[in-house]
Amino acid sequence: MEKSVYFHKNYADRIVPKDKLEKAKAALKRDFPDFKYNCMMYNTKTGLVRFDEAPNFDTAREPITGRNITVNPETGHTLDSKGNRVKEKQIWHHKWMWVMDDYKGFDVQESKEWSQRWLKANEGKGSPSGWVEKWNAKLDELGLPHDDNTTAQDTKMQVESVEGL
Image 1 (spheres, rainbow, N blue to C red):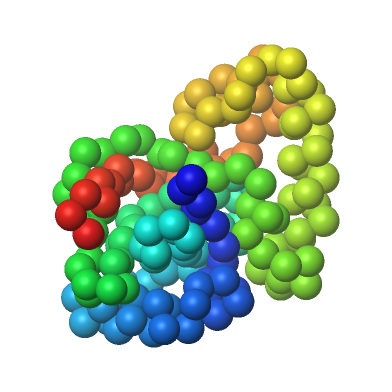
Image 2 (cartoon, one colour):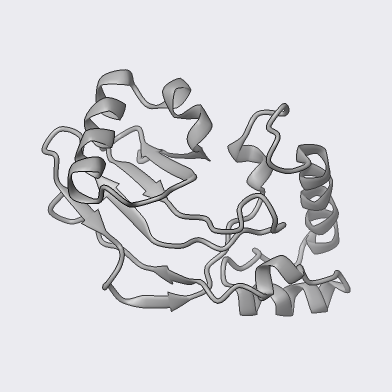
């Protein structure tokens, strides 16, 4: 079973095995020396490491995903999401789950409370969307406020394929 773990880069050394993390960072630096990331994903089955831009991770309730680079630490192959099929404004829910309670970038307790609030309001009403436009329609349906820090962004999500990594 495939298992992807999402987290802020501050916690990479707690989640990704040291040898895989070092190899992945070296490949990223080699192929994309100027790439800035703040979030990551580690697939415990395949060993792939993904480095994610999340330009408003600390300021938005549901951060918009940006460009990402996936690395196979064993082969050193990298895949840049830039240039692949573009989807508009994908978001992440429950960002508090990506950090520890003492994380300083945003109010973790407030983020937990927001998740509880919308989950309770949405109970029995279907899964939430990971796309800004559909998410905002769901918030309207539930009578909950939009997040100006999400809707104001003009960031696009690049959909990737990890075939061949």
